[in-house]
Length: 509
Image (tube, rainbow, N blue to C red; front, side, top):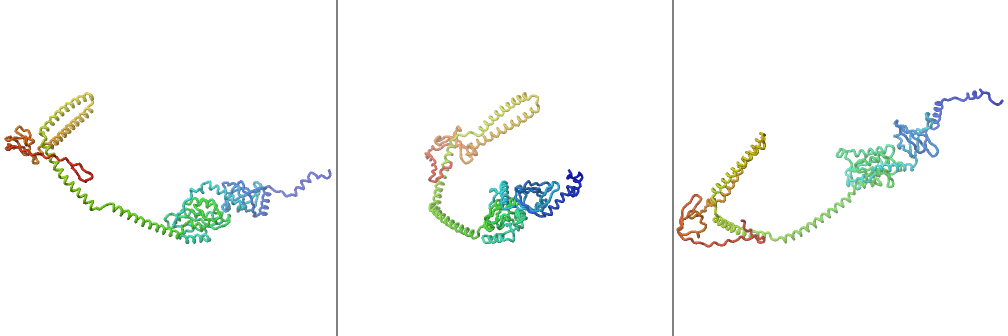
């Protein structure tokens, strides 16, 4: 019991320890940690990254045994050069500090580096799968390169050996106009400058002061995976895929592969090979053109020789044109003689037929037609009267309809009368054309006996018979003084049928 301290002794001893508030202790720890670790490099795997509206990025760095919080401020994120992603193994460079609000320590990141080539390859593969899923590497998007471009655009560093190799190779194969867009091909600004150069060439107007390239070459020399990383950035790959001008990627050496190779239209193993893809060999073209010219000349010579032989053979089988013309002229003379003979025979035959015909007086025909027309007009007028009476009974009190039907009736009756008169005139003209009076006006005469009957032949008369001869301008009397003598009529020669082989024309009537 004696060894025990009195009740007030413990409180008096504790009063010798300095007393801190929570804030004072937190700030003291903050100063100690920041002074002890002003700049550190921490390797770990990024976990749980978040991007609030403030623009800052909060994440955690972890390994198999521990976790530390990390912060990248809004103004630092664009300078990091690496996109903060889940599962990415990095080396973070910055200063260590604490966060008093939750009593945690954290690293303020100023720089990020990928931790080893394995991490770079994993990031590269993940990015390749993502862009491939979007269709940026589809073969259907590839465009054919122009056979002989007028202008070639080159995106590369102006001070490296790449541009000299390209210009030297173009000069050896086929000199072309070259536009160089100088860019950085390595470092933080390289990706943005390469993407801007590709887009800038595509924005050049066709026919402008600065000629628009027909093909683009994006080139860089060899290097490590980190050196070529700018050509694996999404901004560069998307610019290459969106280019309307065919694009050749020539990044690194033959074994180097970047994502721009998948998005470009053609991939060249080296910058010199890209120049070879862009233009053909001028000497080979000249040789090929000369060969085509030689083959064309030989073909034309052979064609002309064969055509000459064919023409000579056709000329031998064609015959003498003078002989053909003389034969056709002889046939024409024969056909003309036959035509004249056939015309005389036709006139004589129709003259005999006309003399034998008994024609009716035109006035009698006209009178008969007039009587028929009067009878038809009387019947039509009677029918119209009946139709008018029936119509008046049907329409009754409708005066408007009565006037309309009356007008139509008058119009139709007048039309019928005009049509009948036209038919009578046409019949009269036709009858007049058939009348023998038209024959008399051409110098012929009509002979009648004393009873007025036509005398058709000399055998029908006797000596002393009284005759009446009618001319076109009147009639005279005559008497037969001599006995008629008959002359046998030669038989009519039937017209020959046309012979298609002889060339004779035959009768036209």
